[in-house]
Length: 263
Ligand SMILES: [Zn+2]
Image (cartoon, rainbow, N blue to C red; front, side, top):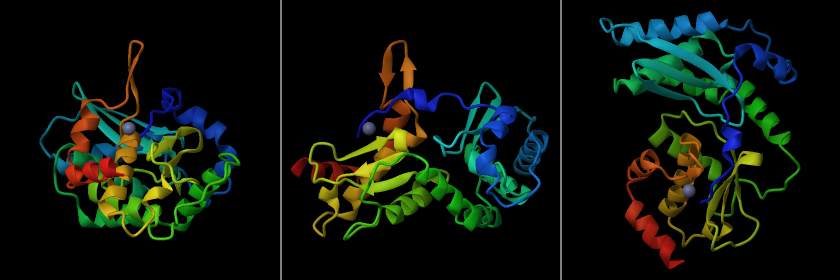
């Protein structure tokens, strides 16, 4: 449950620069014509029109973000829509981008999410290319050794995926997840930004740990991915109002915090 340096969440580069920087990684990807930035904007405009046939078309700013921030987010500020897409989506097919455009816009305007789009995006998320690329990102992130997500009793990858589905519409990119090497009782969970890794104390990998306690710890760290640290002057806001509001959505919040206190 720790903060991480906000510098890692600096604004990422735009389209032009990013294609240079990451050309080596992209070359390992399946050969497929990439969509131009205009196409991406067009797709979002069309999906907006489908959802809201008569509403005025807002201005949209859509960008791909570097892999430290795998999240895909949408915000509406002063009638302008800001979208940031994980760069894993940069080489995706039009149908996948259309699906993500629909999901984001539906979420923003609280409309029901179309099942076909949802399924298409999910298939993409778990497709080979994405899995391989995520693996590649992990392996190039330094030589730090981790125990990995598979504990004796709980698998953190599985817990993450279920939380992502229940609370985040599968919109969070999965960072590396690992059990801590030691039975830490003070630092129960934290996000290691340098390795894009969430570490959960091994103390919880036992049958007497209720699943909701692990879910709560992971959910808390996932909220840190969703709400990057904001800086107000010199003060860093780690658990801001949005963060706290989201945290209250966790159904067994009271039981989980009570369990953690008894450790
Ligand atoms: Zn925290």
